[in-house]
Image (cartoon, rainbow, N blue to C red; front, side):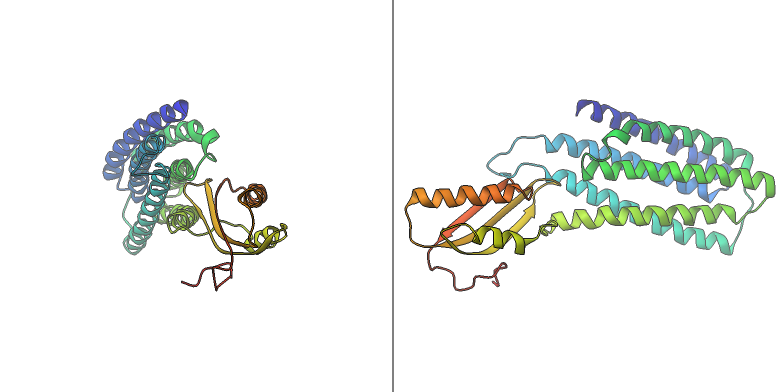
Length: 289
């Protein structure tokens, strides 16, 4: 984890440097693609910094105020990062449309060297975080920032070469649109997943199957009022009511142990079971109230 945090800080420094260089280069050359790449790099720097802070917060211990701990700090940052990516992409698509309507000359001799430097810096950042890109939604959103910038830099370099060779002005906004659409698509998936976690949506678990497995336990009459949610990306919590016959506490504990064993097969480790006898009138999977 410490190695990941160091790599993230290095990436922040690299992206701040790229941002400054590309803003200056974009203004001097008149390249929208280069300016758009600088915006991506700035959002990268802020996104990775936020992800780093979230990692630090997520390691804080549980307390009486935050009994689940601080794991959702990473989900909040993933949501923020993906929202920023969507916003920046839409903004750049609009700007590219305006540029199509009013094509302006671009100094490719300034644009190309700056874009090349940005490309190499982005490649270094991507290499630093690549092995950690599947560790969490938070790191994945930061990695997506870097990957999108790398693709953007590649596109800008290719565009610069085409401008120098063919003088095709429309290539600059066309590259901006292509890269923005790709980023928009990738950011959507992270945004969707982070919203599901924040809204406490059930993960992809077959509740009907779990209900049947629980009700196959001897002594269980009905399992109902399920609640399944994620606190962090991989921390799944489950609670339900189980109707049983009247029994001794030792027998009831055996039922709870068997239920927990069933749920562990579905990746659920945090379980709360409420045993009851002829208590609930509604016995469906979802509580209607």
